[in-house]
Amino acid sequence: MSYGVYALVLVLILWGVKFAGKGQFNNDFMSLEVTKCLQGICSVCIICHHMSQTGAFQKAGELSLFRDMGVCFVGIFFFCSGYGLIKSMQTKPAYMDTFLKKRLPAVLVPFYTMTAAFAVYDIVVGTRMSAVQWILSLSGLILINSHAWYIIEIVLLYLVFYFSFTRIRSEKKAFFIIGIFILVQMILGVIWGHLAWWAGKPFWWQAPDGFSTAKWWMMPSTLWFQGEWWINSTPLFFLGLLFARFEQPVLVWLKQKYWIKLIVLAIVVIVTEILSTKALNELSYWSEFGPEQSLGIGKKYICLIVQTVFVTAFVCFVFMVMMKMRSVNPVTKFLGKIVLEIYLMHNLLLMRFGFMIGSAPGASPVVADNRSNLILFAAIVVCGAVLLGTIFNFLNHKLIKLVTDRK
Image (cartoon, rainbow, N blue to C red; front, side, top):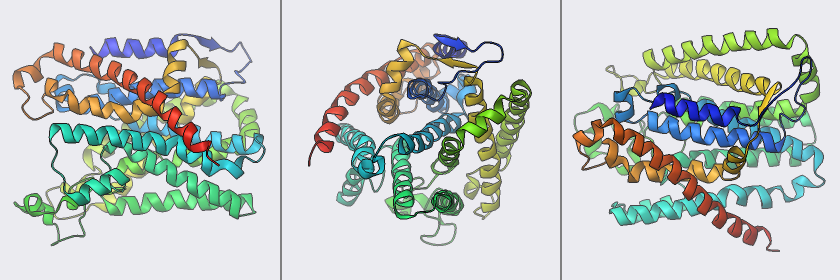
């Protein structure tokens, strides 16, 4: 199964590929069309990443290539976003005058239509939440869909970008503030951890009745920024800003002895990936759940630093390859148009059909161990995500137009 999925992803990459000739480079490798196609491929890879993390897929050893790669694909999203903001600011007159009016609805409308869909699902399956939980979930102050953290993060980055470049005259200071904002998020995110460790008695979650007596908001990954995924790919947003600002001199430098630099970068990717995997396995971001009574903050910082270097090297390698080889085809162009909706909606399918692979209440171990069920489950989730993405993209465009057209 894994080889079949890998082959399909490879086809998506190679279909419509354009190679630059000897001594030449693709001048449009950072165009909106090309980067949207790349993000379309990444959306499928993220679905595979989330499937690979389920118990059934790990037990069967399927899709293992994607298991720790989700952060890299999200890093590409952040890089493209940061790059696009600077380029738009440079090329579109009065871009910042309408920035909030256009950019916020583009991500918040899909966020709230997704929230409504998940709320309906939770009601149908009988999820029991208190009135306070429902209010916080529908407002987005807690996430009804754990994958939606990306929207919260990108909105915060949009806001700090807007206020930095509209309230501060110095470009250097604007960049500095954005960089500090991301750095502070990373520092505090590690300390914040995965759960409300600061509530209740010290190390309350390690007690035999810790979770059974804890309040709902004390559960793991309930509040904003509880989880390394909130912070381990955001530096790529800042890197995208910098690359857009200094694109021409950077490209001139990269083109000099291009193949040597590409090989060196590939080695860096491989080495840092090995170190990142080793750190995640031996130190772990989840060190507060270790045998000793310790938050393990030092271990978390090591994981974050190593993983950040790996993700940065990986994203740089991808775009450096695209200088010579970039891919555009009808499928990835279509996926690129609905990438946000695919990202937000596929978790609904992971939950709804989780019974097929033993990741939902009432699932049969026999069904979960059936390898053919893994194939069927993967097909349903991927195809269903594209279908839901198409439907919600149509709905979101109508609502965004309604919001942005208002005086």
